[in-house]
Length: 466
Image 1: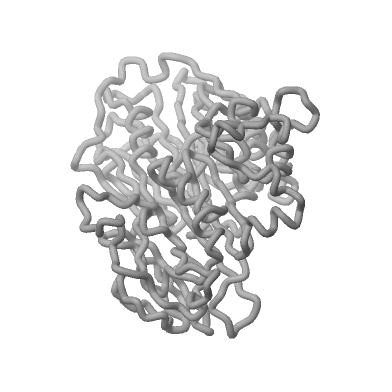
Image 2 (image 1 turned 30 degrees about the vertical axis):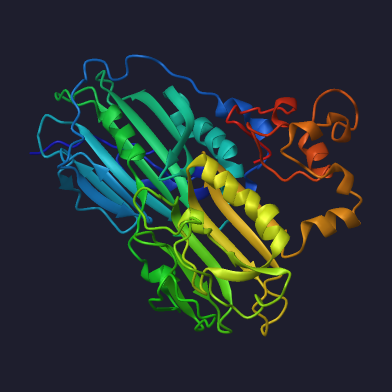
C-alpha cells in the first residue's frame, strides 16, 4: 500500500485562519488569539522579523525536479508552477485545500495549497504580518520545532513570509520532517494564500525539495485569467486604445492596457471611471512598440467632459509611459499642475525608475454623480516589495502649498536649492519623515533624491517613507 508522509501544517496563519492541523491532517480548535487580537505594532515583535538559518537542511539533496514539464495550478488568483513528481492529488482535497504527493512509494513528501477568506485591506494585513509570525512561532507544535528560517518573502509580488522548520516524528522512531511554509494576501481575490512543502527523513529521493519550493514561490505570477467574481455586475466591452470619444458606458469593465497588457477599468452606474487595476505595470518599450516622436501610442487623448478647461489636462490614470491606453476609460480631467509636476507625476516617475509595479489599484472619487471631474485619487501599488498608498485631491498642489505657507520650501531636484535648514527644523543634521512632509515633500523619498542621505532608511531598500 502507498505510504504518505504525515502532514503537519503550522496552522497556516494561526491568528487569521483560526484553526490548527494535527499530524494526521485533522483540524483542531485553535488555542491562539483571534484576528481581532492581532497587534499591528511591528516594533513590539522585532524578534519575529529576524532571519535565522541553519545550514545543511537539504544536505545530500541536489536534484531539481523543477522543469518545463511542471504541473500548474491557479490558486487564490495566483498562477503557480510546481514539480511533476507531486503527481497524485489527494482525494481529500477541497476547494480550499489542494494536497499533492508523489506516487513513487519511497518518496515521502507533499506540497499543499490552502486559502482562507479575508476582507481586510492590504495595508491591514501587511502591518499584521510580524504579529502573525510571532503568534505562529509560539503556538502549538511549531514552538517545539527547530526553526531553520523565518524571513520576508514575496509571492507574485505580494508581501508575505516564509517559515522553515524541522521537527521529530511522534512515533519515537527517529524520523524527522522538514517543512517550509509561506503565506501572503491577494486583496483582489480576498484570499490569504498559503503554500507549504514537507518531506521527511524516510524519503529515498535525491530531490532538493526546499530548493524546488523556492522556485515555486519565485515563479508565481498574478493570474491574468479574468475572474467571474472580479467582473461580477459589470459588462465586459472592448474599446480601442486610441478611441478619442469622451463617452463612457455605465457598469462596464474595459481593458485599458496597450497591446497585450491587461489593465482593467471599471465604471459605475453613472458612467464615472471609479477603479483601474493591474496585476503588473509593464513599462512602454520603444524598441518593440510603435510610438510617435513624442513617445505616445496615440495622436491625442479622449475628450472626457471637463478636459476643455484651461486648467485641466487629459490625465491618464495609468500613464502612456506605463503602457496605458488613451481612451475615456483611462482618462480623467486632472489638474494640469498635479498631472505634470505633482503627486501624479511623482508616482509615475517612481514606477518608471523601479521598472515595474505590481498589484496596482486606482480608486477615483467624485463630488457628485453628475460630473466627470474627479475630486480625489487613491493609488495603491507594490514597488520593490513595498506597498505604497498615494492619496491626493484633484487640485493644484502649488496653490495648496502657497495657502499653507510652504511655497518657500517647495521641493526641487536642483542641487542649488538643497537647503537643509529649510527642512531640518531642529538643526540636528538629520531629516525625519515628518519634517520632510512638513516641508512639502511627498513620500516615499528614494535614493536618488537629495534628501535621502539625511534620512534613516531602516530596511535598506533605497526608499524612506513608503
